[in-house]
Image (cartoon, rainbow, N blue to C red; front, side, top):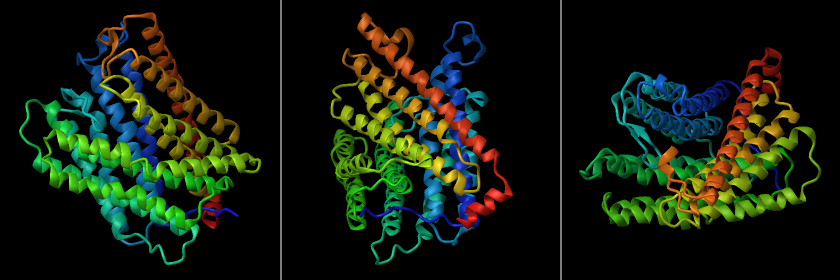
Length: 460
């Protein structure tokens, strides 16, 4: 019989702290949705003149990406790490949340408060102006406090290899990965050579740490997969001992990051290439066994009850999108839109796992439960739209359509290229609708919070 992987949800202050991080995650997604609307308005003929900045499209794109990826993922990490903690240093935990909220607020208002020049750097795009950069630094300070508090307050995993201990070990590996990412960012900041132009500087600054963050998100996704599988009665054929081994393998590549920094200067081609190779080859060592185990579990699972169907949908959709992103990554040659297709698939795979877990956690935090008749269509709408978006990008990349350009700058030369980008656009619109529906369902559940629901949740 397959083990039932689950994590205990603590009552009291730690649960409230996790709720705070979940609220930040949802607000960040909502704000990123606002900026996605501004992206459209800033390019539309009748509304483009409303915006003071000529390049407001890229300005809005910077904030949209940072809110929907960086803040969303970090905040969900805060949910995990707050649940997987002892009551120690709770004040530090609330300080981390408050600092992260302040940094997010500054980044959000920066397009309207300054005259920032957008820098489309990989992993963390920025506005090269004081308000945004201050917000990013404040947010980074909040992440530092979050990680330090998480590492100082982790509960003992114990010597018994039971399923809950395996998941706690997985969360511990994600904390270590996040700590290494912060060290890499700091190392790059201190060691980055003088370069011509801000684009090259921010590319060097975020390259190493940005790669390590991808390991962090993947490790958190593994935990979400197993937790969802346990909650949805999906019999993943993995023992706790095997899960511990896979988490260890997933973390092993992270420890090569300092070796790259010691072996090659930050500004060298070798430093750049080794981080790329590390993520391409080292990142997949644990991914394939986890994906196969979950796929087998879904195939063998007994028919799902009502509340289990959205959780299984989240697992399956996450596996499909994350797998598509990984497969596309092996096809990348040169700089074209296959690159965003790769990371869109991978990022959305993580996001779908977090969405499914949010549906599971909301009623256990004392909020209302999202009805299966809404949750499952939302997940498939979002996943299907993103899959179309990715297919359109891969199709376009085959014709050499370049990344990080819009409008006439794309230089679409044939009807095939136009059709491919049309598929991408339709998929993007469907994904936006799915994302907005997720927020409506999640905030509606939070607004349905009652004392009776909270008492029942604590009792569970």
